[in-house]
Image (cartoon, rainbow, N blue to C red; front, side, top):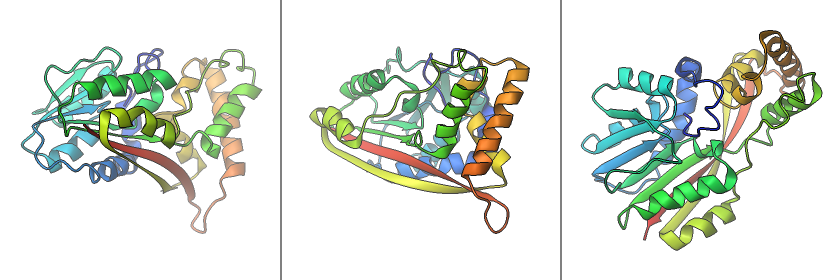
Length: 266
């Protein structure tokens, strides 16, 4: 899922951990693709394809297109290749990636949040500049930094004995819809944005931790020693239990907002 060298610096991403919630993580990929207007693209690149779940969604709609998946994680690419062996996957970093030929659709399911704030816009604009007129650049990103799951993650990091070690951990806020529109409109005939909040029914509060272990929690726990990690997760769980009430059946609803953007090249 990562294409950022910074996000991938400590350890490789885990395809197995990510796929514990495959259906929930794939639904936004379907919702994004539903807003892509092209009917017969020749070439599609899945930016940050992860274990191939989003690439499979693309192939189901465009079986005749030349479809390529790239990701900075070797483990994710290994899983994608084993799952969809007839498609082309490679380990690439978005900062240095250059398409070998014009791309009709650049598509990205939850990747650009891992790049720095200015860096991500520069990458998007650079890749859009290579597209033919009418090409589509479609991406979605989590918009959850203000949700309890992530606020409490930061509070846990700042309040424990690991605070100094984790003081520079975190990800940049994402551009506002207006900022995205203003940056992409000069390259685009149309820029569409929409926002959706998913409410995922999870087994318990521990399942929230299992969810974020595959993505947002990694930069916080990867630098920790085993005992520190255990203590961090215990404290984080306690905070989650206070923030997310259990439902009538004992499950927990995890609100997960996401921002979607579809830009059509001039």
